Length: 136
Length: 335
Image 1: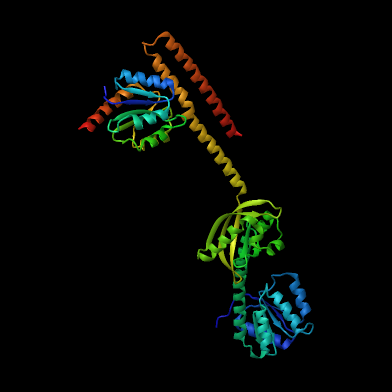
Image 2: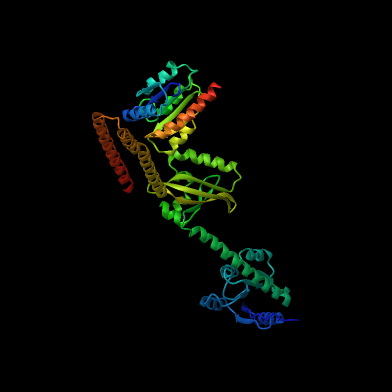
């Protein structure tokens, strides 16, 4: 299990439920917080977590009030892309969304919904490497 | 000496038999078989020429005929010389009259006393060559005028300084509804909507600054019936009888723009449909897939499964309404 906070920012209860289950099954992390309100999530990322602590965020794009893209814009001043690892989750299969994701420095990958256990296991290995790099 | 074997068809209008004999003699010195026709009065000549146009290659005309005055004869000669070259023969040297007749299109002016066989022959050959040349020049001029006047696209020429119309073709008259006289009494300003005048001024300033010959743009014009059309203008600077001008071809693209707008609207609709497919429709589909993934989990109890089934139904309903939306949009495109 990774020793870092994992945030799930998702306004759809089904996807939240599914993602939580996958995180549990893959034993990704102990500390998972879920937010259905992106504003709350933003406040938590900006003020509730030490800037030095690496954080993983599963971020839905299509949310009312604050979209995933706006969310990333607003945490810019508080978080460094080197230890803020964002996975975009979206049901969109539009290529322009995917290319927008790849252009954002925070974004590690674009996960198409529904997310599979395999993709969580893959990103877990990837995150373990990143953590190691960060500590060395 | 080798004689010219061309069978020149020459009409000699000469009332003096002695002079005619001389001419006949001179002609035969250089031309082996000239086809000569001799008449002695103006009225005879008139009858002869009135029959058919293409009877003679050349006319030798004595200016002093018994049945017509000199000035009137010159006037007739000038008209005839449009189709057949005319050489004037006279007994009296009159420089003013000579240069006057030459400027009016007569080919040559020869004083009888000074004529020799060679002079007459040379004069005839020159006149025929010049006529041939003028003929092809007139033909090409006519061809170019026809290109302008019979062009299916509206065209006009306007004065670059005053913007007055200098010439318009039939297509412009037909398309815009103004008569030729109306066009020629107007300037470019009269076919522009008042609010577009600033564009006209801008274009004219630009036109004067640039040395570019060609010019292309899209403007709004007013037809005589008051309707406004959008036209694509292609212009080229020309010298119009000494006046700096521009020749313009105007293509009415009003219809084309309307069609373009319709295509753009359809495109927008199609893009919206594509967006709905990948975003709006994909969302409940992804949710149903997620729910199925959850339900495959054995640890789930009966109640949980029951509530998830409700979620499936809700997502399916959502899909149904999105499909209805897409169908509505598609139908809008078809119309």
